Each structure stands twice: as structure tokens, then as C-alpha cells.
Length: 108
Image (cartoon, rainbow, N blue to C red; front, side):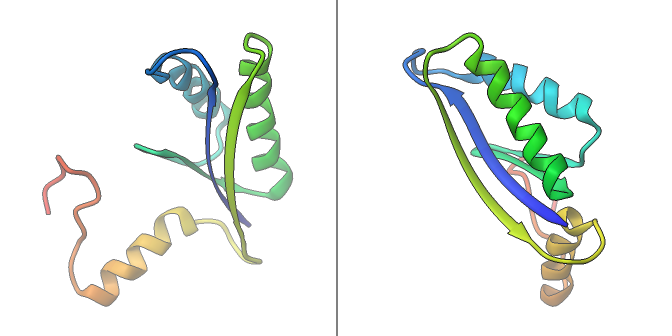
């Protein structure tokens, strides 16, 4: 099972890329692949072909419109069942003996 963190945005389109990120997140959300959005990227979980296929679809969405697209990818493969998107954070909380504040606006 793969945990894949990536960020993607067109280059040279101004300071804010949130509108482009929103379009990419629509593709991710509709894919059915488990994901977690962060301020610096998105983490997806699944089989290698599925996660890479989703990144490819996101790339193709932007590449069809923009001549330059930056993609940053980090992959952690581990044989075994899915669920690490949640279980890795849960394990750290278990070791600490408390819930972590995962979002600035979340209650501890």
C-alpha cells in the first residue's frame, strides 16, 4: 500500500494558485481514493497504480491548459493493508497518550 504526498500547480500563473488547486482537488475527491488535504499538499493512499494514475490525471488536467506544471511527489510504500493515512497519526497519539491538535482551529 502506498502513501503518496504531492503538490501540483501551474508555473507562472501569479502568486495565488488556489483556484487551480481547487480544480485538482475536485479530481482527487471524485476519485474515491482516500486523501487528506494539507496546507502544503495532498496525501493519498492506495495501490501504486491507482495513486500514480490519480497524480497523472491531475497532471493532465493542468498540462492541457498550461505550458509548465510543477509536481512534487513523496512516496512511502509498505506491504500490508490500507488505513495508514489515519493509523500513523493515531499511533503517535497513542504513544503520547493524548490527541494531537491536527488543525489550528481544531479543539485539542
